[in-house]
Image (cartoon, rainbow over all chains, first blue to last red):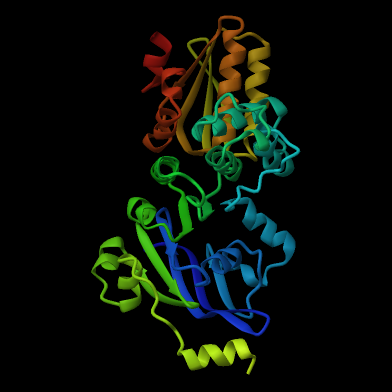
Length: 261
Length: 109
């Protein structure tokens, strides 16, 4: 398997709390990898490290063989130009139209003529089903349309690698399925390496070629969907079968916590 | 990307090789626009040695086609490799551009 990203011995903290506990994993090239796990398992933190927004306490993150954790800002900017990110809230700039949002990275990072940029923007908007919405402002779009506009912007520079943070969050099932189909198209036509952070199981089963599962800051699984389905790891079974957590502490412990002991 | 402009039975053939990306597209655009400004009636684009094209490259050809259509010129693409053809198909541009397998077909049709 050709690796697009390799994480080696990654440790990270928020204050004194260890969030990622010496994790190592690989993300294959040209495939859709889903990073799966319950709320608070560290998956969004891992994503922020993969795109270079956070620096770890220890460990390496190799993208195309180069460690981004030790890169200077200018070098990291070059790597980021080859990445697209669809953030959970789409992160559109509200003072700009949809078209201006999509054009922004192209204007910032290339010397293309405005006439070429405008054609590219219309192509990206059509790709995500937003033809004709060029002059709309983000506040005039639905949640699903905002996500699609965010995706058009993430695609603006034709990235090799694209990251999605909880793409289905807040979307109705039909809109979420439409976004999943779009993710599959991007993989098949543009041969992109796609990384999706989610806890939505229907989405995982639709789009994943490869799955990495995190639990309490550790990697508890990496492999194919079939291997995930066949796993007898109790934490994975709980997740797949949607079984709730058992009480983690006794009434005595609970009393000690709220009494402040 | 490398660009070579050759003559084929009196028509201009733009022979491209390598990657057509955000860095090289402005150079390609400049060359195409020089020919289009002269209102050449037929322009053949040879893709055989193109290894990659991104959306800035596709947009450049869309701009070129639009420019040629304005005076009745014809822009024809030929020898598009399979992987690149997939992108034309996906974006439905295979139905917009005149696309041929080889230079004779492109010239004679």
